[in-house]
Image (cartoon, rainbow, N blue to C red; front, side, top):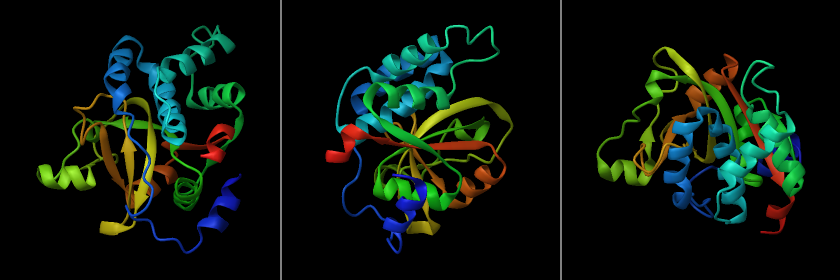
Length: 219
């Protein structure tokens, strides 16, 4: 499936928490946090693994296997000037598990993909406002997730996360699954307003990829 097909299928659909909601990969969050301390670039593997596991309901150390597999494809990546990118992990995941991936360039494409296909892997510029998501008390955070200030503060580096789902409530937002452990935000998740998502895309500070895994098509 490509982004335009997803948009056509999702046309007129309202995004709420009603209906099927992807599973959080709570079994792997702690392990992912440990791996990021050892190799910060593994967040790209975590983002794709979270999408794959949410779509297939599988549990396992997919973050490390995807990231290390992508490193084997390009063993000289450090000498070539940088770590393994989210794009490379997406490509490796499709080669390994079957499927195809597409660059999602607009908010409409991201929302349609989440609604029709599944979670989206996203890489972006990490700002200081992302460090400590805020909420309005425990009840608010449990139901809606902590708020993410992705447009506030200086850029601290690059990061990758998984966009699990979306809601049209409160002006609209997407739900982000991070890989910093269950103590981050609301059990490892936070939310990004659609306004911030659009601004980040327009500023070319966020690159989103929708992956259509063959294995997930029958789920």
